Image (tube, rainbow over all chains, first blue to last red; front, side):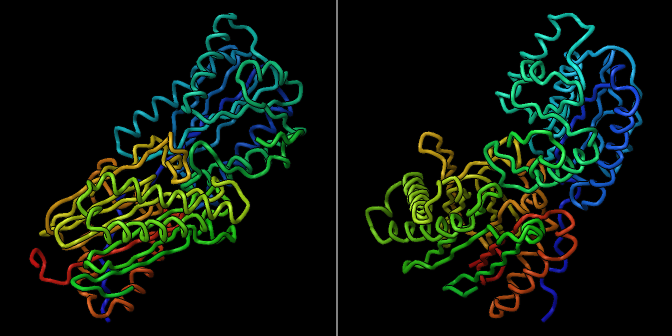
Length: 227
Length: 259
């Protein structure tokens, strides 16, 4: 029998995307082994995503750092084309401003993907900090918190807050809602392995109605709150 | 796979690599029957990845949907009722069957969450009802078009399920009148890769060879279905998606564009 369907081709450049913003605290308190461990963790994330032949073309990473100012280190790029940055720590903790920047990037990317007719899953933001907002006006923090809680309610974003070492989880909870998790020691590598697996699995359809199936966090989180 | 009066049917359902790795079953299901009136009744369903027994839900949904569609066709009174009304009755029957299966398994209905696409086809009409993602494409005179609108969910992995409460009804219905030469029904495992313009325009380089191949297969459907399965299992597809894929192709065996 001849090959009946040998000519069938799939459309190019329609791979669904999962945008992910890494919102990283690079204030002075992160200096030393914390920032070193975070940088190493970012390398692990890159390596893990490259191992997943589908995730590497679907997951898009943007990195925003916050200290005394907020820096969009780079806009969204697919994991295959992403080069993990090496961060340096210095300055205060403009977390509120960082949150607003992350939300802005997410909305902008969704608009671009819509315009390009590329399907996408709900974007992720992972906030990692060892402190609480410092050095920026209180009204900025309040505004960021209100915007974030509204965005989460409107299902605009899938938000994860991760505390490191001296982080004030209660302050994070007030700011970002939900249940922030405390990193076990400086297990950034484990955290980013988990993130890679979660983002990869997130591409599998049918998670449905806001339920995202996530691997257990017990390998890297000090307390498994089962989110 | 069977050959019905004036219609040839091919089906292939492939378990996604992600499910294979996780040891999960194929969560897609399908059911196809021919009504005494000659109409083809075909249903496909995609069980939610987040639901533990969605493969059972998908199976219950397609069987109940085809069963209810046949029951409605049996009654002359129903045959005259608007399709929209019949469609909602079919979806409701599928939802009830999934709820009953959940109850029998002593789990919450959401653990059997699944989408549903049901098609009632005769030679000059295609009646479609859908909950959640999945797509139907018709071919007539060489031109392909999507039947019904794409799922309106913003996010690819957050769709509607037949297990949603009645207050959250997101059933989409459509009725296409006119002769057709081919129809394809497919689940979301392959949906992003076979449309352009945001799910609106069928990708001709996929559908034209598939319909042409299916027409060449009339009389040798079993071997052709295996080829369809192999095509969907090939690297060109599996490098793009790790989800289950189900593809049903109906073809009118008459010369293209005529019956």
